[in-house]
Length: 108
Image (cartoon, one colour):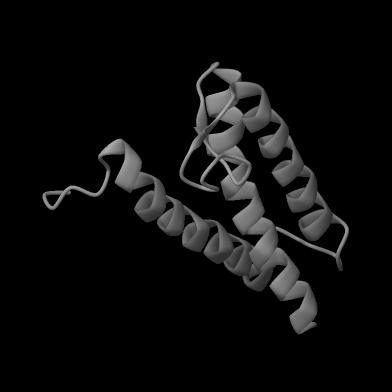
């Protein structure tokens, strides 16, 4: 098993997870934080910027998952590493964006 492939699948999962909130917010016509806002990652970017950023993240996820090695959902290691990348990015996003959207309350 090639460790470089597993690293690519981990980051592919992270990019796939990151694509979701940006693309969905943008497609709904809502502004959302992005690296292009001022300040980066905290200010709001337009819905168009978020659709484009989400699509870019999908392209990177595709490249890392489908074009590196031979990813197989039937491989427990491949699926677990991709899922771990997805989970880690999801937890990071929940903590980061929760500051702005009330998701980090002490009760939940």
